[in-house]
Length: 115
Image (cartoon, rainbow, N blue to C red; front, top):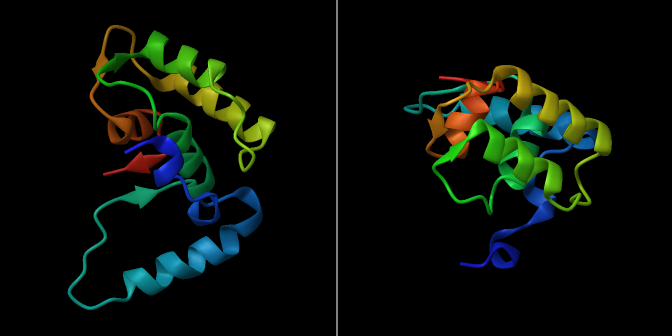
């Protein structure tokens, strides 16, 4: 599936719609029989990182991941400030020499999601 077919920008959390995202998460947390398996520290950054890495071929090392994010064209729904903060998180938190298998591992290692 090409990235253009799977991208629906309206569904990706942004800084300007976090209240709406929090409301949805709260509603999902109240569904009986469902268990929340992860804690997301920053929905906008976690979603932005997922969007930035969606076309990266995994497994990938820290250097490949950070270079890919830096070279990726700026998506319309991710602010430059948010992107710069994501790059800093990756540089500070990803381990040298480790090969990350997927976006989930990267967001966890960056400290955006706790499992």
